[in-house]
Length: 144
Image (cartoon, rainbow, N blue to C red; front, side, top):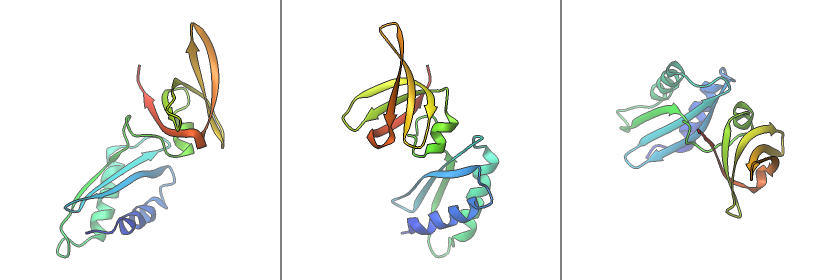
């Protein structure tokens, strides 16, 4: 089976020159099915995915181990993992599930190193709520 850390090292090396891009998830599934999800400060385009795919394929030997490779953007349903993703999505709708199981829906109105601030409507009234990152189980951008 292909080593996940080996793939991550290839991705990190590729992204050294592309500081606007970052990887969000890397999975090695049965049958050496490699899934890589990337994101970017200015979004991700097909050319970005193709270039990364070529970098990974160029570092692997199909004669040694057969594999299937899938490189794509995280997509709208991919949970936010990094502070820069919160920054990039300021003004968009967010659904947060806290560690306690509370679900908070609102618009990202502020981001700092410790928390995300969302604006939400409660009984026809607009409120803001600060959510520390340490209390977030999952945060997903939503579309109305």
